[in-house]
Length: 232
Length: 392
Image 1 (cartoon, rainbow over the protein chains, first blue to last red):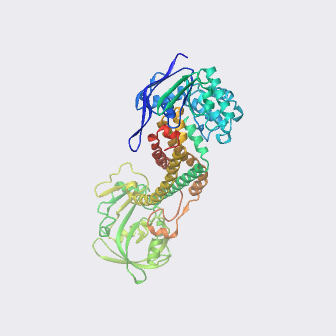
Image 2 (image 1 turned 60 degrees about the vertical axis):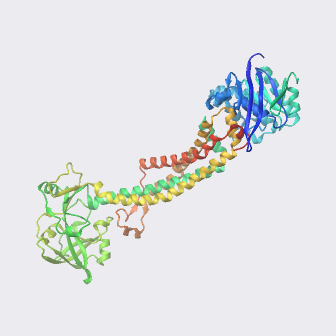
Image 3 (image 1 turned 135 degrees about the vertical axis):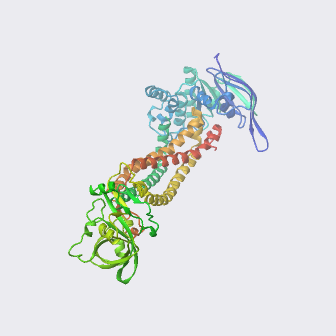
């Protein structure tokens, strides 16, 4: 837990509105080290998703600095930014965002196709990931044939298959019942412990908070609290 | 990878993909068929005009102007010695022109009298019928075309008076007997024309071995026949017919441009819908590490794949149709023979040249690529975070 992976310095994000601008994040200073299992909590509109999007290089800050794996996000070209995401960052979404025309296998295989991994290595990695998530029996199923829990597990398998250094999970349990939420969280804890992958959640689900080792509370775009060892 | 993704997406699009492919296949089939008809017509017209009128090129007396009937009586010259050798070897045929007037059933019809040797084999004109026989004894045997026969109300065996003026300005007249009404596919040797024997016309004009035209059986090695004679190659001779066919082809293009436009709207519409329906997918692909440019390429490729699938369908489903029209042909309605264009009086067999097929394919490919790309360029303006939320 010594290697610095993410650092934000006076991170500020404004969004233009009809009457002026809305400040979603205000001078946020945070650091995340390798292997963290951290969560960003706060009410709706507090800036959780915005912060994750900027860390994931899906968006850029208006002011301040954001370093992810040593790279300043706002200075990356579109290609460099895409490369950072494809190689080093996995995303888990609230609505799973599985591609509907692909099977479970193809959905999980997609990140490896982008990385131009050989077919044999790809197959092994996909089967390993699906086995980890306990969904090998759904290989040929399409997303619309899966339950919510199964869909989210496929989404995690897709995020993990390339063994990223950072996984960003935006409200991963929001659409799941308690039992499925717990199973998903246990799986992510296991991956974090065994592979050392950094997990950063955005959530306001108490079930998730209980699993977190660090809880960052955002309020009105500012860090209100940063509790280490708050959860388990 | 992009190809694989695009292919998967097309299969996943189900009926919409099938409709797009079907529309493109119909348009392609129509375009190829139409082009095949025009190319087949062009080829047929060329062959027929070479067989019946132009040969493999011809020399024309310098004063002759086919659009000025006043030149017809004076546009002739003695056949040069080297042309005589070609005629004797059966490699050329002389034709002498003269203006004249025909009096069928007491009416008066201006005609172009053409003299051609009865024994010639260079052109398909049934000149053997111009030889004097027992049946035609006492009359001047003549051959006319079907259109001329119809307009002058003449038939084989009819006797009709014809008047002409010789080189001294003296009017002469003779009674012709229609020895043959020929069925020719080339209207330009038919309407308003009377064919008689070359020597008889020379004598009637008070000339000897004079010609207006020297039609060649083979392409000449050198085209200079000396002063007073101009060489006209097959391309030059066909220029008018080619221009006419190309004008008709352009008219046909309007219909298929419209069809192509409709099919492009279908693809354009599919792409617009796809961007709207698949905005979350676009956001996800960006999150997974695709650049916007790669996603635009993916969507454009999907459009192009529709076209490639349409081409395969055209090749498979259209093949029997193309084969039928190449072998059996397209019968030209009787009324169209009045168009006065060669090739319009027989069944036209479609001809599909590799060049035509490739050009059609490339045009449709380029238009499809553009129609696919145009709506996807919106993706470049799409924010990944909005796309993930399902906003456009």
